[in-house]
Image 1 (cartoon, rainbow, N blue to C red):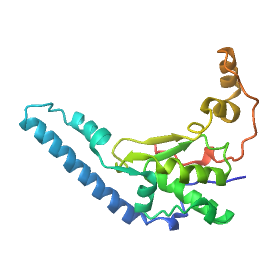
Image 2 (cartoon, one colour):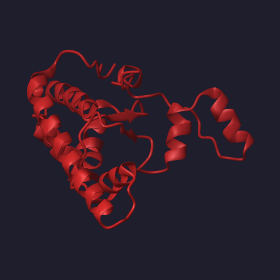
Image 3 (cartoon, rainbow, N blue to C red):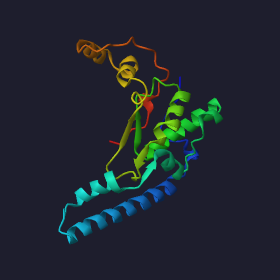
Image 4 (cartoon, one colour):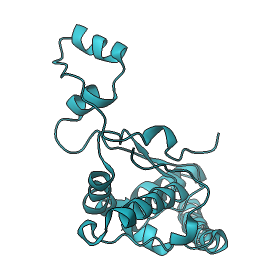
Length: 197
């Protein structure tokens, strides 16, 4: 039931790997130049000379703001409004979005409590619209999006759908109210893309 999200195949909904790599390489080169300028200015001004420090300043404070939606569009992944998609189109588009996010090194956690349409809507209308720094992939940082959090009570959602029996028991021992376990609406989490080891 639900979507299988394998990394291979189905890339027809995004630019080919050569084009994606060209886009990412351009962004990596631009980032390196910006960090070099910060580092050089600090040396001239007898400031902090640690390049790692200026890398963090750039990445966390100075890199341009964007959204994951804009980043997906840059690599050729179209993310239409939910209501415009028939069920088959939605499944195919959702799979492309998930693969595209993995190309950007953005990974999803705890999505099985959402059916495909609810997950797509949550991504399209909420998660992909959040502002993020426009950092290219393969620079040593990854983003993890926990879909059990954000809307409603994240602890309740996690305990209801995702926690193991042992985790539910520990929560109860701590005095937390543990809701009855509910049936997951999908079985996709185990096949979601993950970073290479």
